[in-house]
Amino acid sequence: MSHPHPELSTPAELPKGGLRITALGGLGEVGRNMTVFEYDDRLLIVDCGVLFPEDHQPGIDLILPDFDSIRERLDKVEALVLTHGHEDHIGATPYLLRERGDIPLVGSELTLALLGSKLREHRLRETVHHVVKEGDKLSFGPFDLEFIAVNHSIPDALAVAIRTGAGLVLHTGDFKMDQLPLDGRITDLRAFARLGEEGVDLFLTDSTNAEVPGFTTSEKKIAPVLEQVFHESKQRLIVACFASHVHRVQQVLDAAVQHNRKVAYVGRSMVRNMAIARDLGYLHVPAGVLIDAKELADLAPERQVLISTGSQGEPLSALSRIAQRNHHFVHIEEGDTVVLASSLIPGNENAVYRVINGLARLGARVVHKGNALVHVSGHASAGELLYCYNIVKPKNVLPVHGEIRHMLANAELARQTGVENVVIAEDGVVVDLVDGIASVVGKVDCGYVFVDGSSVGDITESDLKDRRILGEEGFISVIVVMDSVSGKVAAGPEIHARGNALEGSSFEDIKQPIIDALDRAVSEGNTDSYQLQQTVRRVVGRWVNNTHRRRPMIIPVVIEA
Image 1 (cartoon, one colour):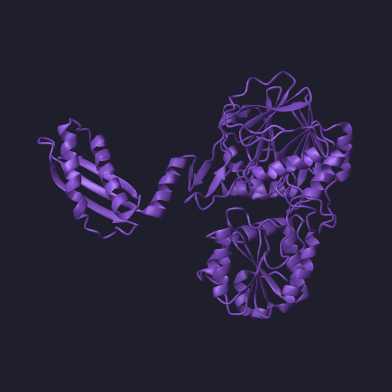
Image 2: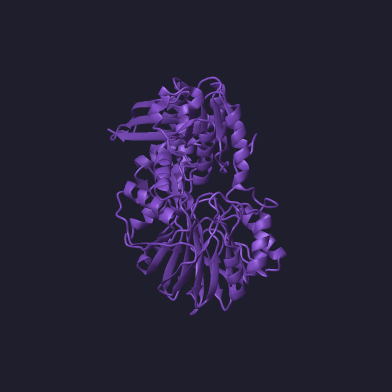
C-alpha cells in the first residue's frame, strides 16, 4: 500500500500509453473535489467543487482547488464531467470557466440545471454542455465515457467509467446503495458488475463513510420520525436541511399534506433549487401546499411549516438569523419546533450548536441528528464498499473523497477483499496507471485558493495568521517622529491598543525604553526606517509579553521630519 510522502518531487513526463491521475482537491478533506486525468497529452476533469471555511480561516467565503498545475494547459482540457450537483462538486466551476470559458460541461439534467443558475449568478454565459443520463456513452478526445446511475443525497447522481488506451477507470462519485430510494433510482450494481467482468484497472471510490460499519440507513426511515414530529408539534414547524436535498424536502412536503399544513421556503438557495427541481420533475409539490413565506402571517402557527437553509450554522443563513432574532419576518415563539435534518460537516460543530442553543433559548424544541433519526448519510458505509469491491474486483484502488482517516479505512476494506495494489494519495499527489499498475510518481503544488469577497487567491496563509492574531490578541500601534537632522525622537511615542485588555492604557512605562532603544539604534548607524520600526516592535513585544502575557500584533510607524 502506497502512502503520500511530503518530499515527493515533480513527476517526470508521463510514459507513452500511460494515464495520469492528479487530484487537485477532495483527498484528505471533505469538499473541493476535483480530479484531472491525463492521457495522450489531453486532459479530462471530473468535478470542480468548493470547500467551506472553518473557524481558523476568518473572513474566507470559499476555498477553491488550485488550478496552477493545469493553468498553462487549459486548452488541452477535453471536458469537465460533473458527477452530481452538490457545491463540493460543482461550486468552483464558475472560477474555472473564468480562465477558459468554452470548456464543455458534462452532467445529468439536474446537475447542469443547478450549475446553470450558479453561472448566471456569476454573470457567465453557459458554455457547451452535454446532458447525460445513466447508460449514455460519450467520447471526448481519447477519453471514452460511460455513465452509471448511483444513489446519493441529491437526485441524478452519476458514476463515470473512463476508457483509454491505458485501461478502464471507474469513478463512483459520491454514492450509497439505498435499496428503497424515494425516486426508485438505485445504484446500478449490474453495471458495476459488468464493468468488473470487463476488467476495472483503477477504481476510485467514495471514502466518506468507510469507518462506519454495516450499511447506510435508507432515506425512507426518516418518514416515521418526521410523522411523529409533525404529530407532536402543536405550533409552527421549521425544518432546516441542505438546499439541494430534494428527497428530504419531498418527505417534509408529504408530511405537511398529511397534517394539513402549508409550506414556505426560506432562504434564497432553497427557493431557487427547489424551483429548479420542481420544474424538472424531481420534486413533486402537491397542489395547494406551497405558499410564499410572506403569507405565513395569515396562517395559524399550527398550520405552518418552513423549510429553511442553515443546517450547518452558517452565519448569514435563514436559520442563524432566526436564532439571533434578526430575521425580517420569522420570529421563534415558545413551543415552536425546529428540525435540523442534516449531518454535521466537520468543522461546523460549534456553529451548529450555537444555533441550537439560540433556538432553545427562545423556547423552541430542537430536533436534530443527536436526538432523533432526522438525517441519514448520502455515502456508502463499510458494508456497501466491501460489496462493491467484491463485484468490481478492481486491479488497483485509489480511495477518494474523505479525510485521510476515511481513505485509510477505505484502503483497508479494499485490501480485505483481496485488492493487492491500493494507492493512498492526497491533494497534488500524482498517480500514474502504466501497464496496469497504479503508483505514486510525484507531486505538484496544490495549495488552498481562498475566496474573500471579490478577491480570489490574493489571501495567503500568512494573511490568515495575521487575522487570527488580530482576532485573538488585538493590536498595538506605535507612532514615533524622528528628527532627520539630529536622529533623535522629535515626537511620541504615541501608543494605542485595540481589541485587548491594554485598550485605554497610558503606556507610560514603555515610552522611555522605546526612546532609549531608538537612540541606541541610531548611534549604531541604523537609520533605515524599516530597521527602526523593527526596533520598536521588539521593545514593545518583549514588554507586552513579560508584563501582560499577551502577543498582540504590533504596528510600528517611524516618520522622519
